[in-house]
Amino acid sequence: MTDNVNNKQEILEKYREAGRILKIVRAEAVEMVRVGNSLLNVAEFVESRTIALGGRPAFPCNISRNDEAAHATPKAGGSDVFEKDMVKLDLGVHVDGYIADSAVTVDLSGNPDILKAAEEALAAAIELARPGISTGKIGAAIEDSIRSYGLSPIMNLTGHGLSQYEAHDEPSVPNKRVEGGIILREGDVFAIEPFATDGEGLIHEGGSWAEIYSLTRKKPVRMPAVRNVLKQVEEYRKLPFAKRWLESDKLEFALIQLERAGILHSYPVLLESAGGLVAQAEHTIIITQDGCEVTTK
Ligand code: MN
Ligand code: MN
Image 1 (cartoon, rainbow, N blue to C red):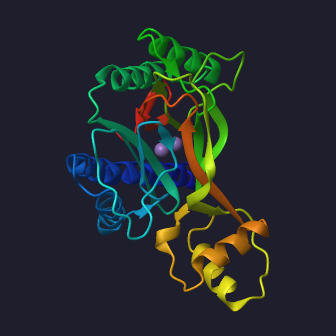
Image 2: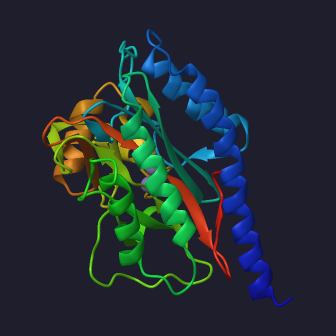
């Protein structure tokens, strides 16, 4: 084999290793999602277990409930416990920057159809994924699956490409029927993530409050407290991180300064616009010669 081929195989092996770690952590975390259990415990378990197994969190453990579609993670010292919620656990693991991204819904709310619709849509998308097919066709399969339940996909959330230290790379993979789209090629790595809802199928940002951030571009900062936080943040490269991962007496102040300077981007919680319940199912796939390999299944 040439070095180039060797290198490709090594990279794929890192994607697979990230997937193997994620599967273990996901199975254990799902067991912890019970009425009365602490969200913070689950998030901290996911992140520390990932590291214990030889991976790194690719982003904070997202625990979004009910009409929260994504980007919720417990705050430091948070005392929230699970109630009869529709719970989305969205986990990211990386090995040398090569990411596995997967989400499951644990339904404590008694709405199994919403969960089934999201899972079935994901299965339909995976069934189609192979070289030569367009992301538009995949989006159509996702939309049709979810509509067959009398539910709506969340149309302004998408799956996405993955690359080294890039948790949301191009192209996006729509959750609805679109014209055209991008043609998949062998070796592409994607996260496919349908969301099903009994709401209107759109999300919006829920205010300015955020627990998740990422570094957009480095710029020099003068104030020592701000510089100290920036230094901690740089460890995560461009990957999202949680506010609760950072330590500073002036954390809120530093984050506001860094966001104002365009150095950090914040991720407010995404809410279903009609207050509908949201279920999500997500896997990471590698496009192979005649189909795809699911690294997180
Ligand atoms: Mn995800
Ligand atoms: Mn994703």
